[in-house]
Image (cartoon, rainbow, N blue to C red; front, top):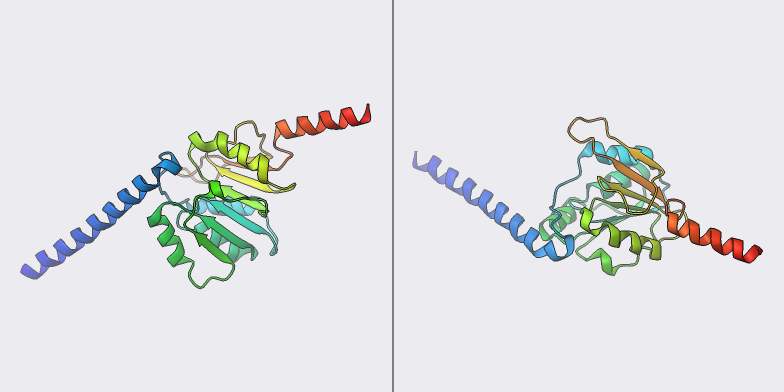
Length: 202
């Protein structure tokens, strides 16, 4: 009887420690994430994204807010791409780092993606909070190269027109996934280029 009580206390202690670590990691990352929690992307959503956005082995995928790194690993397995993930939630970063150990072609960095230039990406994947999407749009417009595809889970990029909106075949995880291509999806840049071309021809 005493042994069972001891085991239960140990289990409860471990669970409490994990919960405390989750809370502390979330609070410490709040100034950057604006309240977005570490919630792993459902596998059906990852599969839906990969089905709709084919990649080549030489492509470079960047996940800005990679969580446990499952998008990086899934893309690497299916397409053989090089994949880089940024994460500021310490718990999520550690999980992603451990689960990606030994997998060639994957990097996970505990770093604020706002301070990193995205010019080398062929595909950018994100699942961010609505409050940062306007700022994200400006960053992408300033840094992406022509042809880069951007995939945003749940929340659209303000001012951008998606090439496609995906809905996973799942009653629990059927929120939209927006697929864009730069600069075709960015109306402001298309307008600027059109006006420049008209001025040049006149």
